[in-house]
Length: 85
Image 1: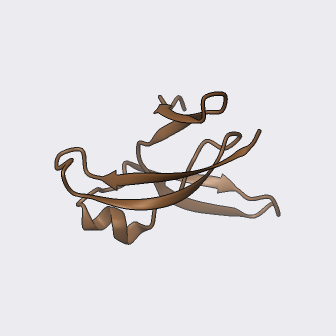
Image 2: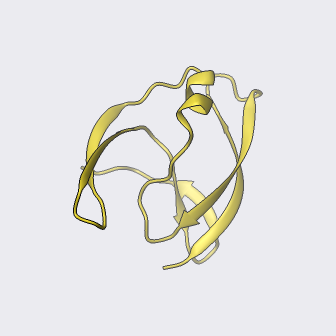
Image 3: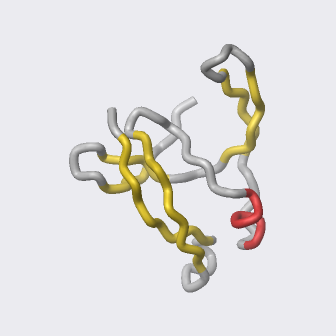
């Protein structure tokens, strides 16, 4: 597992010409990345579901989630990530 720093464009696929460039620290061992709510709301992107997460200290939090990309740790590139629950 490793960390990769990537500058990515975040936006709504319905209006691809409008994006915000953000810097992400991508952990190849993680499944989820976090985008500030204000950025997503600014593009009219709504969450798809809520999910409970267990933190390292044993506590739980509930967060909203949507569709994103996964990291190919060998090529250090983002790829579509189908979510299986």
